[in-house]
Length: 352
Ligand code: NAD
Ligand code: DAU
Image 1 (tube, protein in one colour):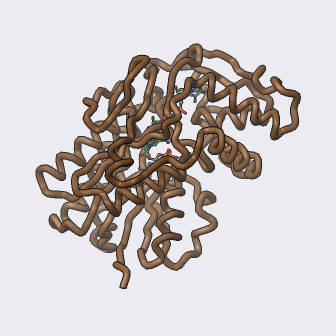
Image 2 (tube, rainbow, N blue to C red; image 1 turned 90 degrees about the vertical axis):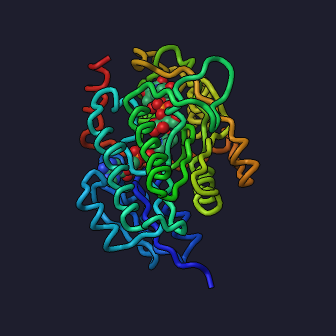
Image 3 (cartoon, rainbow, N blue to C red; image 1 turned 120 degrees about the horizontal axis):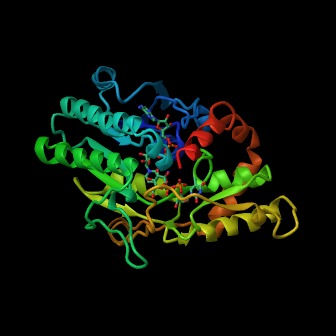
């Protein structure tokens, strides 16, 4: 007899959350999966069309920043596991308007912790999995890697809000015995990512023959992790990690932004049957992001050795799959880039 569970996945209509929801709904048909999402600009139920009719899945629209709503939800549904992904996730937006990052990422996380604490009463069969970021560790120089021992040094409002939420999760574990795990991962990429982030923004702009903005000189380094590999890591950590464990998770693909965008342009030329070099001409160096962290790179030894996780997708393969998905889903792209989308960029660049 397989164990019945009722999991709450927050932020399941967003980029990573939709891949986690899909994986859990399909792999664990004996679980009930509730997706709680506010449907901000980044949340989109089209991301989950293929699983929305599954009998073990339900969607609830709601705001984790509302403490009464969150407490009632836990009392009504008595979830025994939470995978918490709901967040304001974009660094540039946090520089422009930090308040929403405090409300959702800090206070929203605390509301979930308070409700879990009351309903679970230290029951160690329950688990709060907090999905966090490598940005809490600050910035690396030309060498070295972040790992689970790296001291926190958040440097953007987004990173500060995520670091704060990590500390609250740890504090609730230490003080109230709340069972938890935390994962801090590097930059994800793949289908369904909102085109404000580097890779989908570049794909969409190249598609429209619009300039592709590169901050500064494009020398900053990010460690790219294919989103389905990340969803697999979350599944493993949620089910197998010891209580109060933390894991750093990266794709072992640390690349300079300019290298990423050049590769992307070459593949786009091939896919769109444009003469080689056409897309690269769209690269435009623009004013740098204020406080731009120079380099992130992750040492994933702990999750590899303890849980046997490895990132399966090479950057070349993941980038090709991602580009194919966007080119095959131009309706999705056109939908999410209508409305407020262009106004955001106007406000963001006006602020630089
Ligand atoms: P996303 O912006 O694509 O999605 C966030 C989701 O949260 C959206 O569906 C949105 O509607 C929902 N949401 C926002 N505020 C909410 C609120 N107040 N109440 C309920 N739902 C709300 O984000 P993502 O890129 O999928 O990131 C998911 C998580 O992973 C975040 O916690 C982020 O900090 C973390 N993370 C992301 C990356 C990355 O590269 N994208 C890397 C490391 C960690
Ligand atoms: O490291 C994990 C983090 O990765 C997550 O916690 C965040 O939620 C996620 O948004 C991502 O943050 P970044 O700021 O690294 O991602 P972004 O795609 O915004 O930028 C990637 C790099 O590309 C960064 O060095 C800034 C640069 N960039 C970004 C944009 C949007 C550009 O040069 N031009 C751009 O237009």
